[in-house]
Structures are given as C-alpha cells and as structure tokens.
Image 1 (cartoon, rainbow, N blue to C red):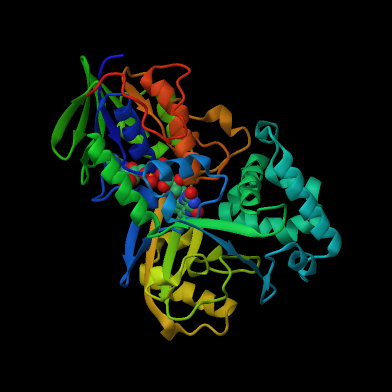
Image 2: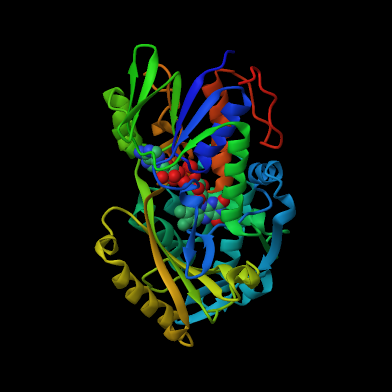
Length: 451
Ligand SMILES: Cc1cc2nc3c(=O)[nH]c(=O)nc-3n(C[C@H](O)[C@H](O)[C@H](O)COP(=O)(O)OP(=O)(O)OC[C@H]3O[C@@H](n4cnc5c(N)ncnc54)[C@H](O)[C@@H]3O)c2cc1C
C-alpha cells in the first residue's frame, strides 16, 4: 500500500482516532475541525474558575478500547476508580439504591416488581446476541419481562428521560446495551458500582491526544469548518474557509444529517439514508456550587422535572480537582420539537434551578457560583426497531469518500469506548486492508510506508 493524502473531517474523538491510526499506517493526514478546539462532545470548558468536561463523562472497567487508548497516551497512571452511589427521586423523596439491600427496601415499588426488574437486568446482562432484540420494541420486551406495573413506574420514566416519546419506536437493543454498560460498572452482580475518571478530566485526555497527533505528524487545523467535499478528477476536494484542499481520500466523521449536506454529489439514496437518521439532542447544564446536593453520582428521576437526571460529578471526582467546589450536571435529552430549545440560557437556568429546589428542598440558590448551558442537537441516533437495516454505509459511492459517524453505532449507548470500537471497525475499510484489525490502540502499528 502506498502513502495516501487523507483528509479527516471532524476533530472529535472519532476523527482524532482515525487520524492517528491512518498516520500509524504511514499516510499523510490532515485533521479538519470546525471549532477552535479538538474533542467535540468530549471537549472541556471553563465553568467559573474550573476546567472540566462540558458534558459529564465516566469510564467503566469494561471500556477496553478506551483504557488501551489511555495506556497509549501514557495516562493509565492518572486513572482513578471510585465506588459511587445511585439515587432515585420518586414521590417527592430521594432514595439511595446503591446496593442490593437498598434496592430491596426501595419503597415506591412493590416487592414483586423489584424481583421482576432485577430478573430483567440479570437476563438482559446475559443476552449475547443483541440482534435478536433489535426487532422487538423496547416497551414490549420490558413489559414482558418486568410486568406492566414495573414498566409504568420504573422503566417508563427512565426511557422517557433519555428518549422522550421516541421510546415508542425504540428497540429492545437499547435497553440491552444500557444494561450491559451499567452492569459492567458493578463489580459483582447488583452489588457495588465502580466508576472511573482520569485526573484532570477530558481536558487532560484531549490535550495528550492532541500532543500524540502532533508528534506523530498529523496536521491539525482547527477553526476549519468544511463546507463541501467533492470528487474532482484524481482528487477529493475539500472546501474549507475560502480554501480548497486536495486529498486522495477523505473521511467525514460529522453527524449523519450534516454529512448529507457536506457531500452534495452523493446519490439520492445515500443522502436520504443520512438525512433520515433521527438524533436525540441534549441541553446539558453544568452548575458549580459551594454545597453538594445528595452525594449520589447519578440521581434518576421518576417525578416530573425540567431535566431528565442529576449527575453530581463531585461525588466521583476528587473535589481538589474542582477547587473544593461541587460540580453538578443537569441533562435534558431532547428531540427537535422540544419547546426548551427556543428558551434562552437565562430562562433555562431559572427553570432548572427551580427543579433542583423541588427535588432537594435544602438547596440554596446563593450557593451557585457558575451555571452554563450546552446545547447539542446531535448526540446519538435513536435506535429504532430494525435500525441496523438503515445504517449509512462507510464507503460512499464517490471514490475516495468515506462516511464514519455515530449513526453507525447501533444500539444507542453512545460512549467513547463505542466510538473507538466504531473507529476499529472502520479502519480496515478505510485502509483497504480486509481483515486488518487495529489492536485495541495499545501500541502504534508500525507504519507500512514511512511518511
Ligand atoms: C451529555 C453526554 C454525556 C456523555 N457521557 C459519556 C460518558 O459518561 N462516557 C463516555 O465514554 N462517553 C460519554 N459521552 C459520549 C462521548 O462524548 C462521545 O462518544 C464522543 O465524544 C463522540 O465523538 P465523535 O467524534 O463521534 O463526535 P463529536 O464529538 O460530535 O465530533 C464531531 C466533530 O465534528 C466537528 N464538525 C462538525 N461539523 C464540521 C464541519 N463542517 N467541518 C469540520 N468539523 C466539523 C464538530 O465540531 C465536532 O468536533 C457523552 C456524550 C454526551 C453528549
């Protein structure tokens, strides 16, 4: 294989990983990112005087690809594992459901419901072939295994919190993938929960990753919004900020509907497939406070609330990392028709703080030091029943153009490990080396042709 000039569009974790691997294979690589920084959804931001992830991120011990990446970036020594607790806000109270005993005591559910829910989780964790579940609506599957009452009281609020009304079209593969990931955080069955983070958060990971790309020789261009990707003769031309860059091959890692707009010469069928991928978005507020709320890393909410969960990052991360303060995320997963999308940040802050006060009556607004709102329209594709039959292809009909993005993650549990796994599936196609599997990112693959 000879050296090729590659353009990688999108500098999130996916684009960064593909850029590094393609460079490992000896290619000349340019990474093009629209914003002024790399990292995409995993990028950090400044909240008051604290720099931490713009969106909450945890690592579980089954994140093999991610742990291998951290190893390659020399960050394994910065990993911290912490036993965390989980709460449920239900009927005006917040209960701890952090271990089996507490779960069995959880008053809002009848004992028969609890047993059936536990059975559903254990059964789900043992299913190996998720494709069997992809043809079954999640509601049908959960009612079958947990019963109607447990579905209405327990599963439905959780499904709505992540998927809104889209839960009606979602397949059981979604709950399977969620169970698999959460189960992996529990060391043994339904006992204790162990989550991890890297010292310094994703700011540390992204900055090391950027340094690794630079020292490998990847050309990084931030503030480079790509407007079109077209084939012209022997080249693929990428229009970016008034310039036209020529490459042998280009891979787009941008969300599917954006990708459809960037590549105008795709066939009608390709364009429609990309456009028809329905994404859940998010409004994710970050709040820095003097006082904590509950000490649970996650509080699931079954009562009506303006946000769909509470993530208290300071219950996981050493508060020394956060200047001694508490960091709380208030996520609200949204679809295109959510009225909140038209609200200003100040209105969202007012509404969310009111919701916090209702859930945690001790909460004092004067304890809030900083409050910021992130809006992301494209977080994960809704895993509709039969979704794997409608996934966009990685190799486009235009020679030299490839499409690799979150729409190719099939069961709705978007996380960095899945993103890296997607990159590992894509690379043999991009590199044109059938059967080549990048070994869990742990070591740079010796270049076939030095660049
Ligand atoms: C609220 C939330 C919570 C999460 N929690 C976790 C967690 O606990 N654990 C975990 O492992 N993962 C978590 N994730 C998922 C994780 O962040 C994603 O898996 C990962 O960041 C996806 O990376 P990506 O590169 O595929 O997409 P993105 O990060 O979306 O990257 C796409 C990039 O393309 C760029 N772009 C767009 N248009 C253009 C253009 N025209 N030209 C050039 N560039 C362009 C964008 O600016 C962006 O940087 C969470 C995500 C969110 C939103």
